[in-house]
Amino acid sequence: MPAARPEQGRFLQALWRFTLLVLSAWLLLSWLLQQIPPLALPRLWLALLLWAGLTVLPGRVLGLPGVWQVAALLLYPMLLLMQWWQGSPWWFLLAGAVLFLLLGAAWRGRVPLFLSASPVLEAIPDLMPRSEAPLRIAELGCGTGRVVAAMVQRWPQHHYVAVEVAWLPWLMSRWRLRHYPQVRVLREDFWRMDWQAFDVLYVFLSPLVMPAVWQKAQAELRPGSWLISNSFAIPGQAPDLQRETGHALQPVLYGWQQSQRAAAVPE
Image 1 (spheres, rainbow, N blue to C red):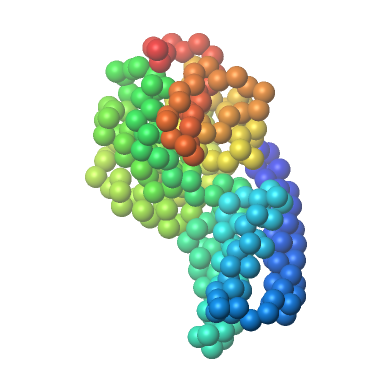
Image 2 (image 1 turned 90 degrees about the horizontal axis):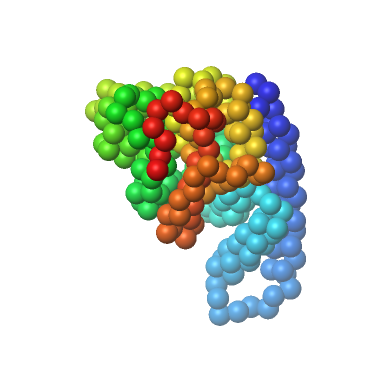
């Protein structure tokens, strides 16, 4: 799919930066542990603190997505745990493979698991179209299904599609939304879906993918459909609506309407 291909190149860039970060941190940690004299702090805790310092800030400087930063931070503690357990390294690789299968394709789309905060859920109604007629509403990358659950409780007359590619969040969404017949929970790659059937799209993805989201929305959404984004704007595209949430980490909801809508527009 054309919109997803640039993300594959970004994945390779992130992988290269991750490898550079981990190798550099490992070499520096080994050197520092040899240079630092004995302290009151246990050597293990000193090593863990140094590893955190060598991965967190440099990871931000390198521009690594959050999921890669977490992976770099946890790598050394996991290796120490395996050494203490004296298990086979293959168990460590197997655990990593299982975790990868559970968390899905965040590495490919550069879309880590972000969960919308409660103030965001309270602000969403200000951007939703006012319509008594049933609308088709989709959340792309629904995570644990929290947003769709809040929507369907407030507007039960609409039809909802919750899309998640990662296995574990998808299972959690399926369980949370199991009692709502007007909700479909799909384990799919939303980049490969056709968006033209939807009246409203809600996304909380990543600033890195918003240009591709806009490109696909422009190509596929019907005139009058709404695209709502939590926190992440679209470069060069002024929103038609904007609502502050009061949340420190998720401060703004943005809304773009593809064109004049036949149904009522949010006030």
